[in-house]
Every structure is written in C-alpha cells, then in structure tokens.
Image (cartoon, rainbow, N blue to C red; front, side, top):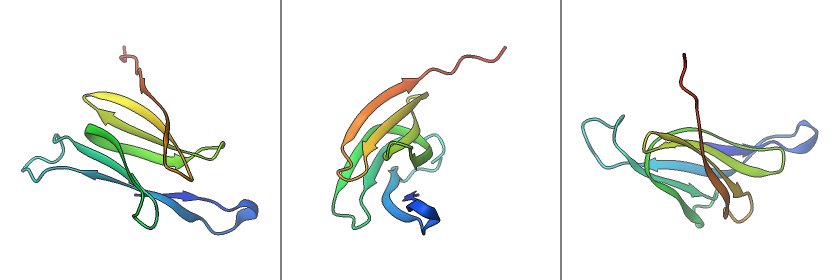
Length: 101
C-alpha cells in the first residue's frame, strides 16, 4: 500500500512511500513469511524493513512526520518508524499484547 502525507490546509494527499510484502510462491500465502520492503515513490530508494514478516497491518505518517508501520513477525507485533525523506529506520520495537481473559 501507499503511505500518503496530507498537505497542510486540507490540500491533496501525496504518496511519500510504498510498502510491499514479498513472499515466495506457496499454496498457503496466509501463513508464509516474507520480506517487507519500503520504497520511495520513484522506486529508486528501497529499504528492507524486516525479514520473516507474515502480515503488514497498517502504515501511516504520524504527527511528527515519520512513517510508522505495524507488522507481524514470528507471531509478534512490531512497530517501526522511518524518516519520511531518507526512509532511514529511526526505531523498531515489539508490541506486547496481553492475553484476553
């Protein structure tokens, strides 16, 4: 999916990056793991976000202007942030979700 940045004063949103989850060709793609890629609109700057990713859940630009991505890797949720201009990873951490009772 494209990551869009909304212009100030309600202008038109513009894409700042695209994410792609690349998995090997297998009969059961739901459970297959792959490589999550982040690239700029031109496709010239490609960053590997993570390997072993099962699902990409969401991506957006946060209030500080960072690209924030939530994905599932090895049965754990991971939240990662990237600089909008350079696509450099600024942080990554696992998110703990407590069990429902």
